[in-house]
Image (tube, rainbow, N blue to C red):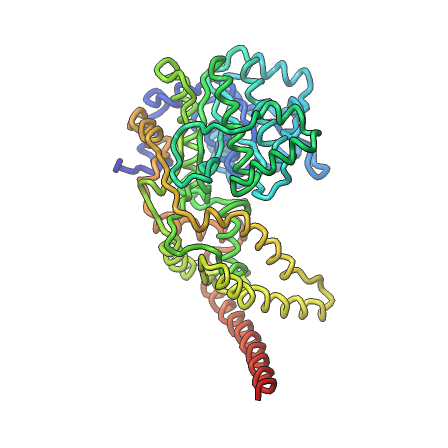
Length: 503
């Protein structure tokens, strides 16, 4: 295991750009980042501007909920993610160029001027954007995850100075197989034909039928998109990075940062809040999660390696950015570490203490769900109606159950990932780059991670004071007393009713 030096340490800062091969590669380059306003994208953009010496980062942003792209970028830059960068470089926003575009539309709906600018100036493309909804409607998932990737690749083919293209996929793009190799898996359908015939109902029905091999539309369309990269390797260096479940940051730009409820983060946040109390998961299954800053660093490092090794590596290389291969962790081990961290950092706003009744058995899970989710939810919703408030807990659990159904395959399967290409990347990186761009998931313990992730969620997601521990514990005891009293009274009434019915 390499010696770990936090990227923000004075020792690393003194090393400077000259000893960093990765920073030297990105220096004065123009990088086009799709998905730059998303969870991973924010961290990538911040790192590029703070550590890589880039000339410019181009962000494609669409109008959303009547908010114009320029305003969305102002909101983005107001995020705590950019506080450290702002102290280092108060004028960093001058290095961000915003172009208006929509991932779901042909050619991103870019105006001619924006397309021309991308062709003339882009050196590196980091294609991160995607719809990450597991249960996304098929045609929408195809348009965004497949069509968006094809458009990004086409922009790369037309760019006059492109040196590297990194497509960010998912470690579960071929999750029908429990042993996942670092290669592009073939598919029995033509992605280009699908994109050209989205109005053909019979074709789409055939695609939907074929996609049942995958757990959900997200992983299926990601697998389709991976195959497109093979056609473009003849034009420019391209690689695929496949992160597993991406969670809070470990170190950068601050420890424990998270602002999304998608994927594993959503279930973790729901559990910490006291909302999710049971899981349809095998307690002994090995789960695979990676810190978002390690994923960001891996994306940037792969962009560098893809160019510098373009002659030695003429094929599309796939990098499985995973933790379970070298730093395995079961769900039950995670539960224990999380409970320890939550005792140190209880939530004041939580509705109940974090507890987990996990089972891979469908019947037991449903029983736990009725007792621990739906019974309290109906009681709470009834109380809310009596107070004239809108009930919401039952609807929340219905939505949670839909998500659970889409991830059931992942939560009850231990996957085995080949990650030799990632290990080759570590070996190629200099000691300075290993410190400036840490992405080796062997270099931290899970206890350390959750000791950072839990207070991070409390501070950045729930906006709570980390020093309110005594107040939060007192409030939680009161909530436990109320919830337990109501629940046991309800169960007592049911048992009493059964007694009178039977006797």
